[in-house]
Amino acid sequence: MLIEVAGVRVPVGRAAEAARLVCEEYADDALYHHSVRSYFFGAAWAETRGLDFDRELFFVSALLHDLALTPPFDSHTLSFEEAGGHLARVFTAGLGWPTERRDRAAELIVLHMRDDVAPEADVESRLLQVGTSADVSGAGLEDFDASFRDALVAAYPRRGFAKSFVHLFQGQAERKPGCAAAELVAGGWPERTLSNLLDQG
Image 1 (tube, rainbow, N blue to C red):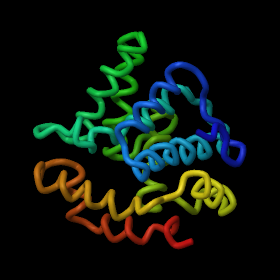
Image 2 (image 1 turned 135 degrees about the vertical axis):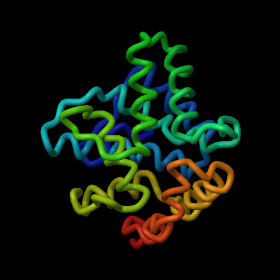
Image 3 (image 1 turned 90 degrees about the horizontal axis):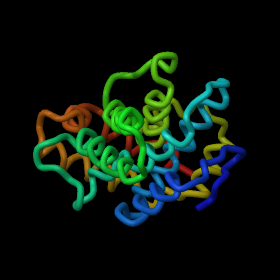
Image 4 (image 1 turned 180 degrees about the vertical axis):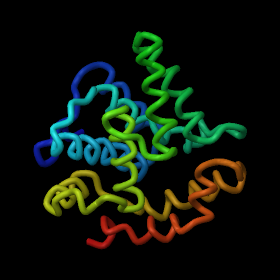
């Protein structure tokens, strides 16, 4: 794994490496690369604005945030972000994180599918929202230099991500019609995702 892209670094240590290994093992390349790119987008956004953030917490949450879309962790009753929050709590318990920090990892994952969080209220949750939105639908891409975007996609290629991700959300919508993914699918989100500028290069 590249630990730096265009000057933005990932954290090092046991928690970060464990999250990377788990994500790489259970997600396909497209979803794994999306998770990493989401971290880099969010971290770059914070650094540009001089925001302090918990890099380890954000990285672990970013790498775990979509694992509940994969068959081993897909819940038939919970939305994928809620199931992902529970997965994060179990994962971080294994790391020995205290309850409050485990709750924070779960909160980031749940909130990334909710209304925007102000960075002054919860910076890490906002960073996951920024990172995932930019990478999935292209929302907010204008906040990033083209050179950074190009370097990130070169380091972690898309590999058909948009099409496969829309398919995953459509599956969630069909089985869980009341979930946030279903609301996105019913709107213009699929079209925006499939026309993301990141896929036009």
